Length: 155
Ligand SMILES: [Zn+2]
Image (cartoon, rainbow, N blue to C red; front, side, top):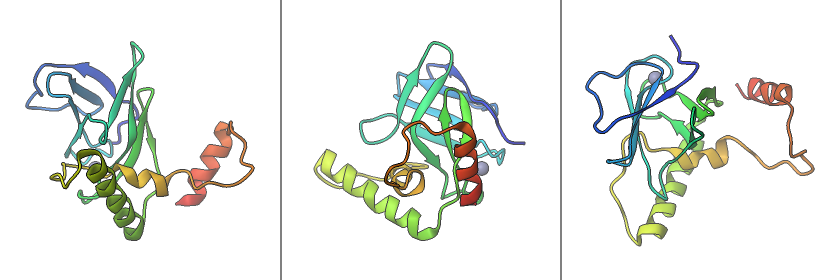
């Protein structure tokens, strides 16, 4: 079963058993954890930092930026959490994944001034290649249908 939504639950420490469809957020540890939205049962850890994920909370729902790409899992699922909803992104080729990882390393090296150990489920910069390929004269506001179509054709 796939999770359609991820409801935030603010916790001090991460609980032992994670429920599908819940995003556990620990401000103490500056990290969130959830069960992979594809339903495979694996745990996805998304630490918050200037070069990792950013969390925004509007009082009801959470948005995580950038996207979550679970390349190290067999499911290789890739999705966004926006406004509490899980939005599936197109799957990426190995080349795109490698490019994203390389980009990510550069980002971290620049920020920290050196190499840092890689983090679980870390992927994100891949979004640069994955999501919005810049098309000139693209209207700023895409209709929901256009977005759906775009995603559809990318499969
Ligand atoms: Zn999965």
